Length: 366
Ligand code: SF4
View (cartoon, rainbow, N blue to C red):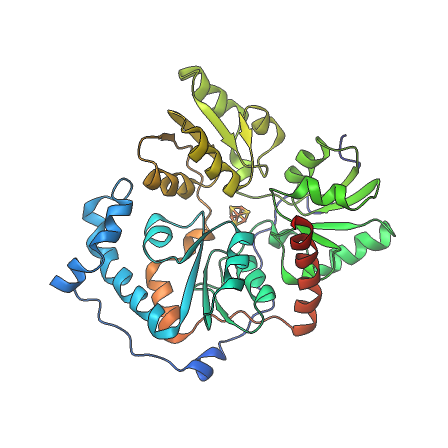
């Protein structure tokens, strides 16, 4: 079923400054700690050495002396603060493997956070992910190490845009991808992830659904359902850069090569793929199928992280980095834990409505 109508920006917006955040009140609540020493010492060399073993396939030994003091200090600060670190699959290997307590896609991370008895969550990902953690964990302090870590999809649509769509299509249910702000989540009927988008759309029992903001995920869903889809023209600036031609060229050089793609990619790219799924789905696919060579058509740190776990698989890397994810670094995580910044604050009324949309999806998954 082709897309019925598409609305919204014809080009992807630059990420907007986060709108619903404020300076940390957390520092008054929990207090600021002294900054730890980052000097090299035999202890710094010894204590985190086992963590380097996890990433030695993807991080050269010459870089480890820079990371090791931060890794040791951050892991000690987590204990002092009763804090946990949630790291998205697109974080760099030293964050993902050496300081994170939980790794996964944005929803997996938020749900994990609900199960832990921690006072503080440090979100190593982008701003909408930190908001989702705060929505699901309203009593915890949620920090993001860099407030400018935005997302081109989340920045492509506002709550006011959703209200205008509702006025234009009265009674048509609205589904929002989790890559949206809390303000947008508060205006929609239900959220979805890239792994459950089709199931969510079909669960609504409507012959037409407004699906936002990712035009490519909307097309992917429209291609697998009889429900008519009205879409928004947002896009992920990382995934829309891949081309079908570059994938065909890889395949021409090695016909046995496996190609797996994220559904935020354009349709002609997805057509070249042997498997399409969410970041968590892609990782599971590689774990299960153990291909000899594979192209992961997504943000390139994810291939590093899976490579660290599965050194026998060869990853071909058409490397598109997400500049927003890469704003998160070990020095900024350290500052977050010492100074309790930057705290994610959401208006309680917006958070409550956004939580309803997220929980409706979670309950659907059973
Ligand atoms: S990879 Fe794309 S969807 Fe993910 S945070 Fe970056 S811009 Fe947003």
